[in-house]
Image (cartoon, rainbow, N blue to C red; front, side):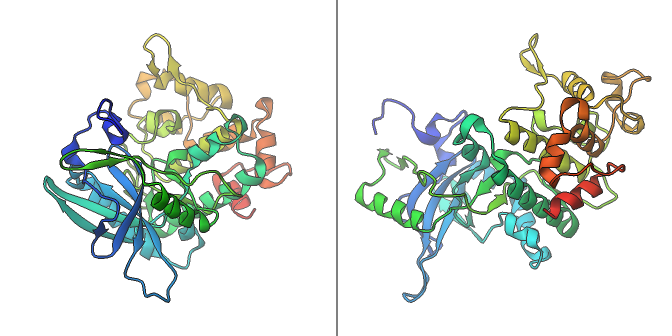
Length: 379
């Protein structure tokens, strides 16, 4: 690499080299994890493939992913909160099936650089995000034979988070769902390739910035999906609500927009919109104001109502921001009702999607979230 242009993490907005730990390939962290290759980078961390060198010779090699956080993120209270949440998730009920579909921290430690302390998190290696995987497919659409089991796995994971851990993720999106590596031999081949052709690096006096590698083309169906990134998650109870802003703009639940108090149902709304987007290869909502060239919550609410028809008044009454969007005569509904109604609304063809998801049938007269949750979870 040359010094003439930024590379890797240098290309990110607000990049400051002193925030990043200067990792070297071959370096051993915590007297245990030997760095083998760079897997990725972001505004808050770099990610590396590593080998656990404490294993006995007769034991199978154990590979992990090291996520080495930037110094400024390490100092952030939310980081320690995410680590505590991961510990809670891992211990809440290890026998529950949903734990298998949630990414938890295997180990953690601190690394000291010349600029400060960096928190290091250890995970099971994963292939890629769901959004990256979708881009491999024609028109970005997931076929039914992949979407059905994916939906079941994610619902099982949410059931565990909500009922056993009392945690609301608040940021479900394809970028926060990771897919497992379909064949362990892929890791071995990446290591051999790194040994034969070491990753190029931009060299400074105090650090090397390596080019990252990926696991290459798929060799079959992707591995087990896992919900990841609990940096914005909150602990809750079944009778409590929150009112601070959450969720990506186009995935916001109506109660979030209206500041009507949100809880576990916000994750269900997230999942519903995300599944539509993956099935269709496009966003269900646009919510774009050409005059301001930005997201518009009023347009978002209008789009919801255009899909769902006249809603009840309960949520409107609770909403602290209702007056910004509605007159007293207008109404809106909760996220769960919105999700189920939009799926079942015949005039827009959504009945076919529900039949696809739950395997046919006319449905139930009581369009409750619990009914469809139970039907889908049993697929």
